[in-house]
Amino acid sequence: MVEKTTIPSGADQYVTITRYELLGHLRKKRIWVIFIVLFLIFFFVLLLFPAAGVDYPSTFEGYSQIYLGFMSVLILLCATLFGSDALVGEFQQRTGFVLFPNPVKRLTIFLGKFSASMIASVIVISVYYGLIVLFIGGMYKTVTIELAYSLLLAVLYLSAALGVAYAISAIMKGIIGSTVLTFILFLFVLPMVGMALGMAEVDPWFLVTQSGDTVTYVMEPEYQAGKFCIQQARQTICFYVPELATSAATMAGYFIASSILAFLFFRRREMVG
Amino acid sequence: MREVIKTVGLTKMYNGFPALDELTLTIGPDVCVGFIGPNGAGKTTTIKILTSLIRSTAGKAYVEGFDIRESPKAALMNVGSVVETPEFYPYLTPIETLDYLGRLRGMGEEYVRDRSKRVLEQVHMEEWATTRIGKFSKGMKQRLGIAQALLHEPTVLILDEPTSGLDPRGMIEVREIIKDLKKEKRTIFMSSHLLYEAQEVCDWVAMVDKGRLIFFDKVENISKLTGAKKLEIRLVEPITEEQLDTIKNFEGVAEVSLVHPEIVNLRFGGNDQDRAKMLAEMIAKGAMVVSFQSVGMELEDLYMDMIGSS
Image 1 (tube, each protein chain N blue to C red):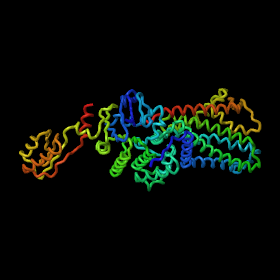
Image 2: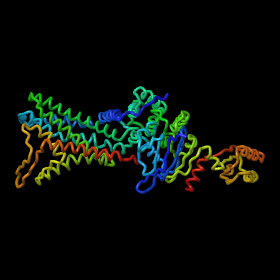
Image 3: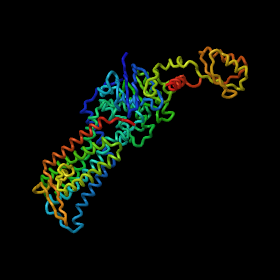
């Protein structure tokens, strides 16, 4: 007896794809690698001060800033491990031969995958923020609203980083290439470009890694954007604290542009080979 | 006639090389078409276009009247497919995979559960239903590929070498499944490099070479086209000159060859009655015949003729 099925809506298919992609992220070992790194960072910083015989920072904001300095590493890990193989994997691992001949649009697949990567990453960074609230907030008996702003900026930075990771994943032929390129881009290339521009006294406001630093800067009691220079030996090294609005717009711009680029490449890509 | 699968001037170029060269083919309802041809002939390319895995460079492809490029969702709704050796998400179990794919096709929870159980039984994978696919062999994945293609009870099945990767028992089982599906009034379009498989399972044969359709007819018509059948006669004792002359002089006999003193191969254009007559004459001449049978297949002959001359 054949039960009639109707073509499900794109929204229903999106929910199905997101659900199963998320299940995939949760079942893979990589999420545990990220959690291990996360807990190592957290407890390393927590135990560092008593181990070194140094007093803890005097304020909640000050101590939180030390923790948030590692947020870019966590976001980089999330973008690399949850995003860099999401699209290219369908082609290289040939799972697309089963997924793509279904009556589902590539846009729905893209959105479902991206949402699952985003949810998995937000779970990770939320755990980190949760630990800050629990341990550091508990230690200082206070939690400031700036931490919530930092979380929002971290989510925005995460979406930009994932967008870039997806764009690389849509373009690259292999998973390893895509993973390595994403990692190197965020860990070395963009920070080094930012540093070089700083030395040349050019404001690198347009670099997403520069904008991502606001995750930490926002904890300053009095946020002050601008150029700050340090004289070291014979050299002046300048760094720039970006405007919050400019940084948010830059990260949103990266997210939108890279996501569109990723989708266009993904839509055009054929299951050859 | 309802056109279930139709290609019109379908062309696919890869770096200037035509993998498919203006292929025009129309397949009606409730037939099984074997799609054969040498490696690189364009079989998989055609199937990939029909399943929206790649885009054609020119021409059109329709499934159930829907243009696969303009309305892929509608065109693929009633299609079940296995393309190349399928790979699945290793972190899911077959039950989860079928649930995932069933829901993408709009199947309800209960329906997808019942059908999953049924198709896994059909491909003898029920005991692996809750084991993660990462541990599966190529043959098991091929079986699961067939299961997912049957899950939503599609009216059209597009199968790319469905027995590839299976052991002999698995191949026989898959052929039996396809034969059963034929009884259920479905249109089956399957590529195969195994000619006997196409001849055994299918009603029609479409042959491609260098991206072009070079033959498309019913399997039953192939013997009319190929004419002579290959026969092999085995004797207890070496054949005598007189017995050999009897064979050579029999009407409709061509290409007699003695492969062994007790084995004669020949091509014979006669019908079953003529064959019986020849056998009777041989026995009358004192030949002790052990076996007297057709060898090889008409499709094989046709294939060699067509591919050789194309």
